[in-house]
Amino acid sequence: MTTEALAPLRSRRLQLPVFLVSLGHGATHWIAATFYLILPFIKRDLGLSYAEAGFLVTCFYLGSTAANLPSGSAVDLTGKRVLFQAVALVAGSLGLLALGLVTPYYGLALLAVVIGASNMLWHPAAIAYLSGHFPRNRGYALSMHALGANLGDAVAPIFAGWLLLSRSWESTAMVNSVTGILCAGLILALLGRSDEGAVAAAKQLDIGAYFRSLGQVLKRRAIWSLCLMAGFRSMMQSGLLVFLPLYLANELKVNPFWMGFTLMLLQLGGVVATPIAGTLSDRIGRRPVVLAGMFGTTALIVALSLISNAIVFVFCIAVLGFCMYAMRPVIHSWLMDGSPPHLAATMTSAMFGTQAGLSALAPLIGGLLADRYGLVSVFYFLAATVLVANALAFAVPRTERLT
Image (cartoon, rainbow, N blue to C red; front, side, top):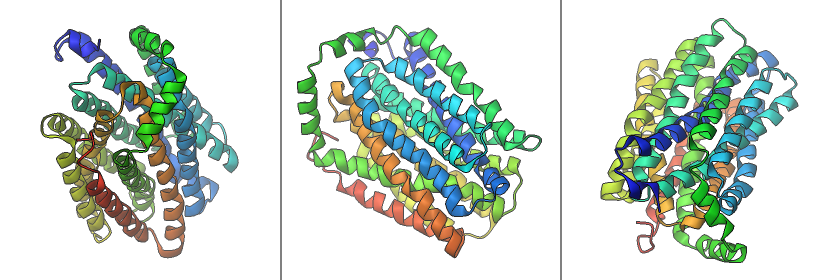
């Protein structure tokens, strides 16, 4: 029996797991956002090219891809969703802490792999946990989960930017690493026993039946249309998160605090949009919300490649955040709607693995373009990726269960 069936959605007892899992999600993005913000200062202090800086983020996504492949199956076959969330938080914190202690380039690349792996290890466990507890309000629960990510992405850059005014990037990384460990302790202490039903169900799961069912689901066109759509959307997002700080620092010449403030505006758009989009999708369906978000994102990312006025540019960044992040929990909910409960974490891994694999290409391609043609050329590339995502959104079949 799901938790949702036992009490009204508004009860504090039900809101506690949503709050804690969303808080943990915010901590994973706090760690990743800190990494993105200090990247221009790593580039400056180590004398890296744009391609070398982009390769560090490619390593981040390679770690994400590697973690996604086995983690979903591990979560579904053990049922230990809370434990995996805590492990992801601790691993990310330790990776960010070590980033402030290691200076050789290849050491930084290895730590980027660790941070990326921890960031994506979180999602199969957390999304499966919330999806199982709130099947009738999945859009709402996953939108609150995404809201936590937006808050982490919004607050971390401005806090890290403030630290960078008086501290080195190494010290900033170490200070910001504490958040994940604190959240892991809270989640283990307060949610540790809520997985007992999932663990018991996993013990009775036939492994052969699990893999046969997985094979059948993975053959469905709707699943891979959604995964590829999400992948190209994430490819655009990852490129933007890498090259927007570099553009602000190297082209617009803003100081670290205002750079963090601009990135915060990007996330605040998501803070506003995410709960609206998730709750609306529970009422009118996933497809119209995703298509509206894709259309808005396409128009705005094209506009960014044409705007030279800094004030207008920053305003468009805030509106872009509204459109870009509104889609994220709705796409996840759309996938969960068509995934068997015993494959929830595995299907999350399939989607996030696709996202991570395609996202790994964006920093490297963008870096090569920036070195040869300038940073503005990266925005044309990102516009192309979101146009592909837009086309794939229309390609998701209406006839299958993903409605």
